[in-house]
Length: 408
Image (cartoon, rainbow, N blue to C red; front, side, top):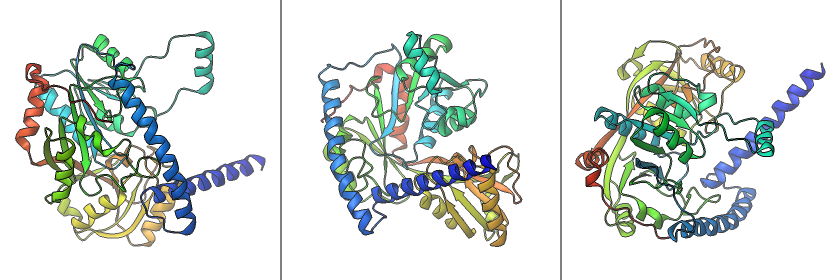
């Protein structure tokens, strides 16, 4: 009885925390218009000015060489963005890694492993107390085998490891350490920093910056009031700018803004195109047309769920039910069971989610409805020659352009 009581209390606390977290996200994205939302937005606006000062100071210290980057004697390519979440970075990293591997590079993707399982506190405390060496980076894929699951590795690293045979994937907050390990143990000759635009200890020879055309810089504020990690002017560090979700030509104002801060960077337009539906924990693959007019239910825990739902509507599905969870939400059997029961009650014949969510579906979950994810890949719409040039500059380093220093 007492165990059940504490379990209920724990679930209640988690639900309250999740509601508060969703409230904060809605304020940041200007979706919360209530009086308390506006009051909280003012508090976050103050904090964003503090954060801005810290970001400027950090960039200044690196620019003045007071803080120093640590060269590893290896080609380093950075893929990142100025904002948090939602730019569609993972398919771009996958496309770039696949192109480089096809051209003979030994590629290692270095990720911080956001939301991956952390080392227990008591082990970290004991290591600090005894001055023991830090553990080796997590090797998600050694190029031949996927060695860790999504809980241990994090969603994106696991997804990349599963989709990229022949490519190394390592996870560690210290990506200098991870890069050195990839070079020393596995012979990597190209390091690809996933979400590395703000990781200044390891300097990129090429910086590929992603900008979401549908929501480039949010409300223009830095965290925590907005979605910017650093000022827009730091576009100047980019070697190439990828406009993602660019199914239509961008507004003139956006390209002018990019060119004003960085007249030398090439702009590459790309879109995330749906390819097929893949069964989760199964081998069945269905064409996009197979779902046209089919009643489905959708769940997702990503930064921009509205875009995913629009993808499905544009494919002609009959969307009966949509459930949005927090970004990187780790699903339980119980909540997926409840969702599927609601889906059945709404007449859905299939349940669909994203590939990133699919890796967080527990293997022991037995869905009463067929469960699929939508496979999405990046397609270059404009600037394909520039993309090929970027790949060539990585493969033939004598063609590298000089690094562009950032303004702060």
